[in-house]
Image 1 (cartoon, rainbow, N blue to C red):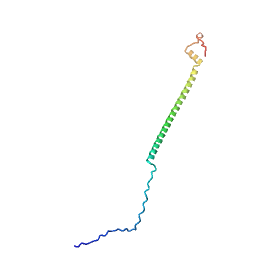
Image 2: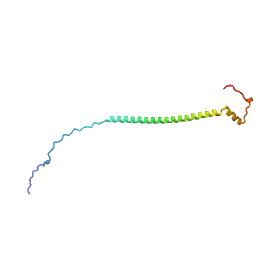
Image 3: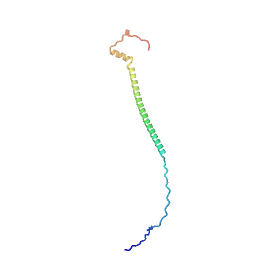
Image 4: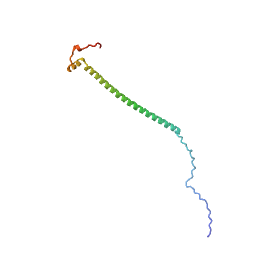
Amino acid sequence: MALRNYQSEPYIARPSFPEQPPQPKKPAIQKSKIFSKGEKVLFLGLLSIVTVLSLMIVQTQSTVRATTKDISLLEQQIDTTSKENTDLSIQVRELSTYDRIWKKAEELGLKLNEQNVKVVPGQ
C-alpha cells in the first residue's frame, strides 16, 4: 500500500457578492434624563403637599357648609319661637282685659261689694 502524500491547502471561501466596506458605527447617544432622582423626590413631595392641602380645603369647606346649614335651621327655629311668643303675648292681652275678668268673676259667683274695694294709688 502506497502512502499518498496530499498537500493540504487551506480552503478560502469567497463570497459570491462583492464585499462592502464596514460602515462606521455611530457613537452611542446617551439619553439625558429629564428629571434626576432628587427632582423626582421633590416633585413627589410637592405633589403630596398640594394633595393634602387640597383635601384640607375641601374638608374645611364641607364643615363651613354644614355649620351654615345648622345656623339657618336655628334661625328658623328662633323665628318660629318668636312668632309663637308674639301670638301668646297678644292672646294674654286679650284675655286679661278688665271686662273679660269681670264677666268670668260673675260666672263664678263673685259680686262687687264696694265697701271691700280698696284703691291703690300708682300706675
